[in-house]
Image 1 (tube, rainbow, N blue to C red):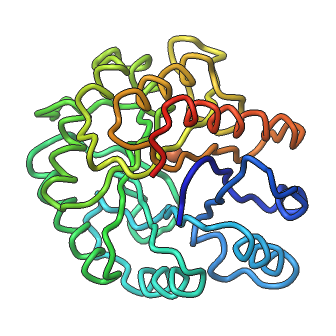
Image 2 (image 1 turned 45 degrees about the horizontal axis):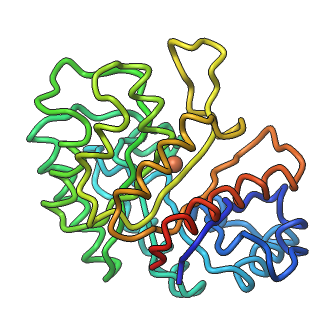
Length: 276
Ligand SMILES: [Fe+2]
Protein backbone atom coordinates (compact mmCIF):
# COMPACT_ATOMS: atom_id res chain seq x y z
CA UNK A 1 0.00 0.00 0.00
CA UNK A 2 1.24 3.46 -0.83
CA UNK A 3 1.52 5.75 2.18
CA UNK A 4 3.75 8.53 3.41
CA UNK A 5 6.54 10.11 1.38
CA UNK A 6 8.23 8.68 -1.69
CA UNK A 7 10.90 9.27 -4.31
CA UNK A 8 10.75 8.71 -8.06
CA UNK A 9 12.84 5.73 -9.14
CA UNK A 10 15.64 6.67 -11.54
CA UNK A 11 18.43 4.33 -12.53
CA UNK A 12 21.02 6.84 -11.24
CA UNK A 13 19.47 6.54 -7.77
CA UNK A 14 19.25 2.75 -7.69
CA UNK A 15 22.31 2.03 -5.54
CA UNK A 16 21.34 4.61 -2.92
CA UNK A 17 17.73 3.45 -2.85
CA UNK A 18 18.81 -0.14 -2.33
CA UNK A 19 21.17 0.71 0.51
CA UNK A 20 18.76 2.82 2.55
CA UNK A 21 18.46 2.08 6.28
CA UNK A 22 15.11 0.94 7.60
CA UNK A 23 14.24 4.33 9.06
CA UNK A 24 14.52 6.05 5.66
CA UNK A 25 11.82 8.64 4.89
CA UNK A 26 11.36 6.92 1.51
CA UNK A 27 8.28 4.76 1.92
CA UNK A 28 7.50 4.08 -1.73
CA UNK A 29 8.87 4.64 -5.23
CA UNK A 30 7.32 5.49 -8.60
CA UNK A 31 8.27 4.52 -12.12
CA UNK A 32 6.98 5.07 -15.66
CA UNK A 33 5.98 1.72 -17.18
CA UNK A 34 7.22 2.89 -20.59
CA UNK A 35 10.79 3.13 -19.22
CA UNK A 36 10.84 -0.44 -17.91
CA UNK A 37 8.64 -2.59 -20.14
CA UNK A 38 11.52 -3.57 -22.40
CA UNK A 39 14.42 -3.10 -19.98
CA UNK A 40 16.57 -6.08 -19.04
CA UNK A 41 20.03 -6.74 -17.61
CA UNK A 42 21.49 -5.21 -14.47
CA UNK A 43 19.27 -2.12 -14.65
CA UNK A 44 16.16 -4.32 -14.60
CA UNK A 45 17.60 -6.43 -11.83
CA UNK A 46 18.14 -3.32 -9.68
CA UNK A 47 14.65 -2.08 -10.50
CA UNK A 48 13.18 -5.44 -9.47
CA UNK A 49 15.12 -5.35 -6.22
CA UNK A 50 13.87 -1.83 -5.48
CA UNK A 51 10.28 -2.84 -6.32
CA UNK A 52 10.72 -5.79 -3.96
CA UNK A 53 11.78 -3.50 -1.16
CA UNK A 54 9.45 -0.52 -1.70
CA UNK A 55 5.79 -0.34 -2.71
CA UNK A 56 5.62 0.83 -6.33
CA UNK A 57 3.38 3.42 -7.98
CA UNK A 58 3.12 3.36 -11.77
CA UNK A 59 2.84 6.69 -13.56
CA UNK A 60 2.27 6.53 -17.30
CA UNK A 61 3.65 8.86 -19.93
CA UNK A 62 2.10 8.01 -23.24
CA UNK A 63 -1.51 6.83 -23.05
CA UNK A 64 -2.52 10.19 -24.46
CA UNK A 65 -5.87 10.42 -22.69
CA UNK A 66 -6.56 13.71 -24.49
CA UNK A 67 -5.59 12.38 -27.92
CA UNK A 68 -7.81 11.22 -30.76
CA UNK A 69 -5.92 8.13 -31.91
CA UNK A 70 -7.44 4.92 -30.50
CA UNK A 71 -6.16 3.98 -27.06
CA UNK A 72 -3.09 1.75 -27.21
CA UNK A 73 -4.48 -1.49 -25.78
CA UNK A 74 -1.20 -3.30 -26.35
CA UNK A 75 0.48 -0.81 -24.02
CA UNK A 76 -2.38 -1.11 -21.57
CA UNK A 77 -2.02 -4.90 -21.60
CA UNK A 78 1.65 -4.53 -20.68
CA UNK A 79 0.81 -2.00 -17.95
CA UNK A 80 -1.77 -4.41 -16.54
CA UNK A 81 0.82 -7.19 -16.50
CA UNK A 82 3.29 -4.89 -14.76
CA UNK A 83 0.70 -3.97 -12.13
CA UNK A 84 0.13 -7.66 -11.45
CA UNK A 85 3.85 -8.50 -11.45
CA UNK A 86 4.71 -5.76 -8.95
CA UNK A 87 1.51 -6.06 -6.90
CA UNK A 88 0.47 -2.48 -7.38
CA UNK A 89 -3.04 -1.19 -7.91
CA UNK A 90 -1.95 2.42 -8.43
CA UNK A 91 -1.67 3.74 -11.95
CA UNK A 92 -1.90 7.38 -12.95
CA UNK A 93 -1.66 9.29 -16.21
CA UNK A 94 -1.63 12.89 -17.35
CA UNK A 95 -4.53 14.95 -18.62
CA UNK A 96 -2.81 15.74 -21.89
CA UNK A 97 -2.15 14.26 -25.28
CA UNK A 98 1.08 12.90 -26.70
CA UNK A 99 2.01 13.11 -30.35
CA UNK A 100 -0.43 10.50 -31.59
CA UNK A 101 1.21 7.15 -32.32
CA UNK A 102 4.69 8.56 -31.81
CA UNK A 103 5.20 7.84 -28.10
CA UNK A 104 7.41 10.89 -27.89
CA UNK A 105 6.19 11.56 -24.36
CA UNK A 106 5.38 15.16 -25.20
CA UNK A 107 2.66 16.09 -22.79
CA UNK A 108 0.64 18.62 -24.74
CA UNK A 109 -2.25 20.58 -23.26
CA UNK A 110 -5.88 20.06 -24.14
CA UNK A 111 -8.49 22.87 -24.33
CA UNK A 112 -10.65 23.12 -21.22
CA UNK A 113 -13.98 22.49 -22.98
CA UNK A 114 -17.11 20.43 -22.31
CA UNK A 115 -16.38 18.30 -25.36
CA UNK A 116 -12.90 17.48 -24.05
CA UNK A 117 -14.33 16.61 -20.64
CA UNK A 118 -16.57 14.00 -22.25
CA UNK A 119 -13.84 12.78 -24.60
CA UNK A 120 -11.23 12.29 -21.87
CA UNK A 121 -13.70 10.87 -19.35
CA UNK A 122 -14.78 8.27 -21.91
CA UNK A 123 -11.17 7.22 -22.50
CA UNK A 124 -10.48 7.03 -18.76
CA UNK A 125 -13.51 4.75 -18.41
CA UNK A 126 -12.12 2.51 -21.16
CA UNK A 127 -8.78 2.33 -19.34
CA UNK A 128 -10.44 1.59 -16.00
CA UNK A 129 -12.64 -1.12 -17.53
CA UNK A 130 -9.58 -2.74 -19.07
CA UNK A 131 -7.38 -2.56 -15.96
CA UNK A 132 -10.20 -3.45 -13.58
CA UNK A 133 -8.99 -0.61 -11.32
CA UNK A 134 -9.77 3.05 -10.85
CA UNK A 135 -6.91 5.18 -12.09
CA UNK A 136 -5.80 8.69 -11.11
CA UNK A 137 -5.22 11.57 -13.53
CA UNK A 138 -2.69 14.34 -13.05
CA UNK A 139 -2.94 18.06 -13.73
CA UNK A 140 -0.05 18.99 -16.00
CA UNK A 141 2.00 22.12 -16.51
CA UNK A 142 1.12 23.83 -19.80
CA UNK A 143 2.63 26.71 -21.69
CA UNK A 144 -0.18 27.64 -24.05
CA UNK A 145 -3.67 28.51 -22.86
CA UNK A 146 -6.26 27.69 -25.48
CA UNK A 147 -8.67 30.55 -26.26
CA UNK A 148 -11.32 27.85 -26.71
CA UNK A 149 -11.46 27.28 -22.93
CA UNK A 150 -14.98 27.19 -21.50
CA UNK A 151 -13.89 26.68 -17.88
CA UNK A 152 -10.79 27.01 -15.74
CA UNK A 153 -8.31 24.21 -15.15
CA UNK A 154 -9.63 23.01 -11.81
CA UNK A 155 -13.22 22.99 -13.06
CA UNK A 156 -11.96 20.92 -16.01
CA UNK A 157 -10.13 18.46 -13.74
CA UNK A 158 -13.12 18.10 -11.43
CA UNK A 159 -15.55 17.62 -14.32
CA UNK A 160 -13.43 14.89 -15.93
CA UNK A 161 -12.81 12.97 -12.72
CA UNK A 162 -16.47 13.19 -11.68
CA UNK A 163 -17.68 11.97 -15.06
CA UNK A 164 -15.13 9.12 -15.17
CA UNK A 165 -15.42 8.44 -11.43
CA UNK A 166 -11.64 8.28 -11.12
CA UNK A 167 -9.10 9.69 -8.69
CA UNK A 168 -7.08 12.90 -8.83
CA UNK A 169 -3.28 12.87 -8.86
CA UNK A 170 -2.49 16.41 -7.77
CA UNK A 171 0.83 17.94 -8.82
CA UNK A 172 1.35 20.99 -6.61
CA UNK A 173 4.36 22.21 -8.59
CA UNK A 174 2.33 22.15 -11.80
CA UNK A 175 -0.43 24.14 -10.10
CA UNK A 176 2.10 26.76 -9.00
CA UNK A 177 3.90 26.94 -12.36
CA UNK A 178 0.61 27.38 -14.25
CA UNK A 179 -0.62 30.00 -11.76
CA UNK A 180 2.49 32.15 -12.28
CA UNK A 181 2.76 31.61 -16.03
CA UNK A 182 -0.86 32.23 -16.99
CA UNK A 183 -2.13 34.47 -14.15
CA UNK A 184 -5.55 32.91 -14.64
CA UNK A 185 -6.11 30.81 -11.54
CA UNK A 186 -4.27 31.53 -8.28
CA UNK A 187 -2.61 28.39 -6.92
CA UNK A 188 -4.48 28.43 -3.62
CA UNK A 189 -7.76 28.90 -5.44
CA UNK A 190 -7.00 25.71 -7.38
CA UNK A 191 -6.52 23.86 -4.08
CA UNK A 192 -9.63 25.48 -2.57
CA UNK A 193 -11.77 24.25 -5.43
CA UNK A 194 -10.36 20.84 -6.27
CA UNK A 195 -12.61 17.87 -5.53
CA UNK A 196 -10.69 16.91 -2.39
CA UNK A 197 -12.30 13.54 -1.81
CA UNK A 198 -10.83 12.33 -5.09
CA UNK A 199 -7.23 13.36 -4.36
CA UNK A 200 -5.39 10.08 -3.81
CA UNK A 201 -1.80 10.96 -4.70
CA UNK A 202 0.42 14.05 -4.85
CA UNK A 203 3.58 15.08 -6.72
CA UNK A 204 5.98 17.77 -5.66
CA UNK A 205 8.94 18.86 -7.77
CA UNK A 206 11.30 21.68 -8.60
CA UNK A 207 10.99 24.10 -11.49
CA UNK A 208 13.34 26.41 -13.33
CA UNK A 209 12.80 30.08 -12.52
CA UNK A 210 15.60 31.67 -14.56
CA UNK A 211 12.87 33.81 -16.10
CA UNK A 212 10.50 34.61 -13.21
CA UNK A 213 7.67 35.32 -15.67
CA UNK A 214 7.86 31.89 -17.31
CA UNK A 215 8.54 29.06 -14.92
CA UNK A 216 9.49 25.73 -16.48
CA UNK A 217 8.46 22.48 -14.85
CA UNK A 218 11.81 20.69 -15.12
CA UNK A 219 11.96 18.17 -12.23
CA UNK A 220 15.63 19.16 -12.24
CA UNK A 221 15.79 21.64 -9.34
CA UNK A 222 15.14 21.66 -5.61
CA UNK A 223 11.56 22.34 -4.59
CA UNK A 224 10.76 26.07 -4.37
CA UNK A 225 9.67 27.46 -1.00
CA UNK A 226 6.33 28.64 -2.43
CA UNK A 227 5.61 25.11 -3.65
CA UNK A 228 6.33 23.68 -0.20
CA UNK A 229 3.88 26.26 1.18
CA UNK A 230 1.30 25.09 -1.34
CA UNK A 231 1.74 21.47 -0.26
CA UNK A 232 1.25 22.56 3.35
CA UNK A 233 -1.87 24.47 2.30
CA UNK A 234 -3.22 21.40 0.49
CA UNK A 235 -2.56 19.06 3.43
CA UNK A 236 -4.41 21.45 5.74
CA UNK A 237 -7.53 21.12 3.60
CA UNK A 238 -7.53 17.52 2.44
CA UNK A 239 -9.64 15.01 4.36
CA UNK A 240 -6.71 12.55 4.28
CA UNK A 241 -3.00 12.94 3.61
CA UNK A 242 -2.28 11.18 0.32
CA UNK A 243 1.03 9.47 -0.48
CA UNK A 244 3.27 12.22 -1.82
CA UNK A 245 6.22 11.75 -4.14
CA UNK A 246 9.25 13.92 -4.88
CA UNK A 247 9.90 13.94 -8.64
CA UNK A 248 13.54 14.45 -9.50
CA UNK A 249 14.52 13.37 -12.99
CA UNK A 250 17.97 14.87 -13.59
CA UNK A 251 20.59 17.34 -12.26
CA UNK A 252 20.76 15.07 -9.26
CA UNK A 253 22.19 16.61 -6.11
CA UNK A 254 23.72 14.39 -3.41
CA UNK A 255 21.38 11.67 -2.22
CA UNK A 256 21.34 13.30 1.23
CA UNK A 257 19.86 16.44 -0.33
CA UNK A 258 17.11 14.36 -1.93
CA UNK A 259 16.51 12.63 1.38
CA UNK A 260 16.13 16.02 3.07
CA UNK A 261 13.40 16.93 0.61
CA UNK A 262 11.62 13.61 1.11
CA UNK A 263 11.98 14.12 4.86
CA UNK A 264 10.39 17.54 4.46
CA UNK A 265 7.35 15.85 2.89
CA UNK A 266 7.17 13.43 5.80
CA UNK A 267 7.45 16.24 8.34
CA UNK A 268 4.55 18.10 6.74
CA UNK A 269 2.50 14.91 6.70
CA UNK A 270 3.17 14.36 10.40
CA UNK A 271 2.14 17.95 11.10
CA UNK A 272 -1.37 17.12 9.92
CA UNK A 273 -1.54 13.56 11.28
CA UNK A 274 -4.18 12.37 8.85
CA UNK A 275 -2.35 9.33 7.52
CA UNK A 276 -4.38 7.06 5.31
FE1 LIG B 1 4.00 15.31 -11.72
